[in-house]
Amino acid sequence: MRLTALICALALFLVCSCESEQERVAEAVDNPDSVAFMRSRGISSLISDSGVLRYKLTAEEWDIYTNTQPATWKFMKGLLMQRFDQSFQIDLYVQADTAYLHEQRTWELRGRVAVRNIQGTIFLTEELFWDMNDHQMWNNTYMHIITPERELEGTDFRSNEQMTDYYVSNSVGKFPISDTESATPEEPEPEAEGAEADSLQPAVELTPAGQRAPAGRKPAAPNKQKNEQAHFK
Image 1: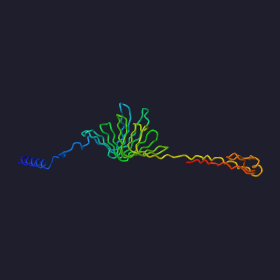
Image 2: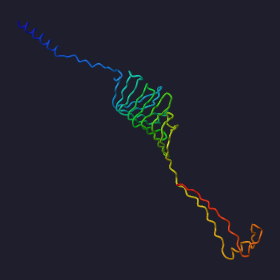
Image 3: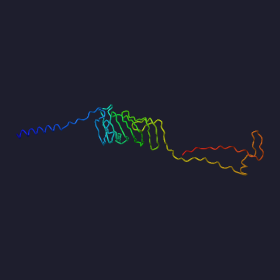
Image 4: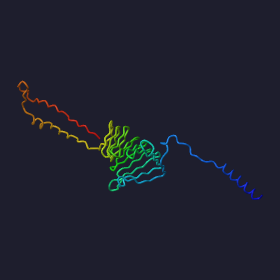
């Protein structure tokens, strides 16, 4: 009798336990493109190209989407990129509020975008595209360029990958002009007065009609033109 009661109690316990457990199923995803294949946070990664170290990426969040067309890396909370030359020296800094890398080929940088090349020139814009296969950078929006010697603003920016050979359409520039000393023309010496001045004048002057001028009359002084020079500071 006791054995039968123990078996019944055990069976009842198992039935109650199975009823209390609920299978947890994840919700269906309607758009698979919205799900990241991989998500990383607080990353600092080194990336090589053809076996050579070329880039260092630093970001708060890095999402990789493989189901999208094209496949895209997304840095929605900012990106800092450093590029290395063949001597492993940093030759380019790139910073943006938001960055996308499409098919591991074309960068799309948006927000507050700042780039500094090896010459110290700074490029400020709100949009910049970079094709790493064609080694070209471009945008069609406002671009502000700051160099140690000048500032340049414009649109329709085109550049090589090193950001050292570039041009901007509709450009407006600011160029400092150094102060130079003005060249002051020398003043002519005043003519002598009195007897010395009279002794230098001819005694007789021929008039246009070939007549003699009255004695003691001095010829008219020639007109003098003053040369003026513009001086910019």
